[in-house]
Image (cartoon, rainbow, N blue to C red; front, top):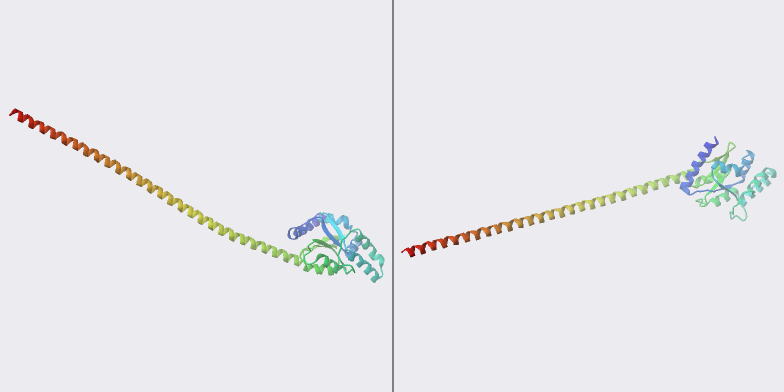
Length: 255
């Protein structure tokens, strides 16, 4: 059963890792209400929280969160009830919050997280006011104790809206890239067609040149043949004339 809970927690953490850049060791700010609930159900925060998240964690608190326990003890006149949670918080690293005069836990955590939770804090609380105020801030994981067990809450509506916007932006970028790819493919296709046309023209020019050369060669052969024929006929005509002249001379001699 614990394995299934750990798997679910890891899936939720994976959302914060990919969308908001959370990483180990996770910085977990623990308030007095969470420490009090942990003592009541015997949850050892320093041991069980890393096992539940299957990750290394850095447990933090602030001076305001510790002093609020003193304020509650004085108001309720029950010092013993808040002494245990106070001792638990003092074991954790005291993160400077900048509130010199002190303030309520809700106000202190709000200032620590800010509008964007740029320091990537995880909030461990049982305070309904704190949970409510962080529903409107994207990227703030909340850990509570539910049914005697640690429980990492589902992403808040603000976080889910942020994830939706990022998804739509990603789709928009992909569609823009698709348009660019279509334009590039069209340009490449035109270049390919132009190259094919140029190759065809060059091939036709070469063919025409070959035809011209073959015609010139045929004309030269015919002219040389006619010249040979005319010279032969000329030489043959000269031979006939000399024979006739010889006959005439013989007749004259006989007379």
